[in-house]
Image 1 (cartoon, rainbow, N blue to C red):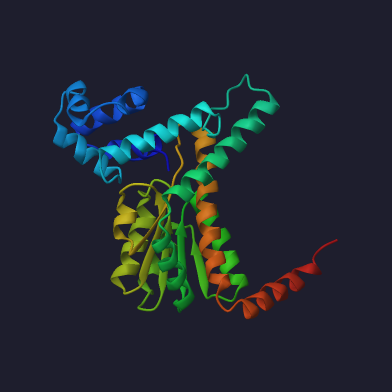
Image 2: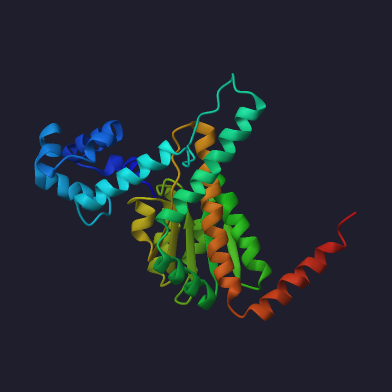
Length: 282
């Protein structure tokens, strides 16, 4: 995940001093790579200690690692190897739309891979393999991702339910218990009914998994296992499309991880379900 994207994802969580540093990096990244901590701090009217806290909040060991990451990002841009999120305008041709949407989706997947923690993914897979029952919560576009994950898990004989309606979400969470798993999917991490359902499930003894955008949020805070996606919803529709693609990528990763377990039996389940629907084709 690029330094620029990390900054954009957690910008609202930064202190006023850190926001000054963040804005300077976004606007003058090429200059930052040659600055000492004291010079960087002086340009942003803050202290060297604030600079160090800022880079550590972004996940870097120190200023040098931070500057190396910025330099790598600059090299990618110069070599035209970096996909970007672009707004679709009313003046765009069909080819422009094809290019912008596909590049945005590729970028969302690349950034999500960069922010996914391998240990957290493994923990989520293990929890789903061992789960007695799985409840998945999502609303709107995130609800469609929840529905897709439910269908996939159902095909491999997992006991799984999915709820998009707020009343049924909350009602189902009351019946969760130890040995069950609840998954909450929300790009913002702030969808109230998903938060309440995950919180209640946890209180009832279930293990909780969140799939949200990178950064702290109420839903990720209540989750035992946090899985992050990365997509910048800077543009109304292209951003929403990219966030859905990022969520689907995470859902597919954990599904394949679960399906890999006891693969010979899982393959039979998948073939059986394929055979069942074959007669419905014309």
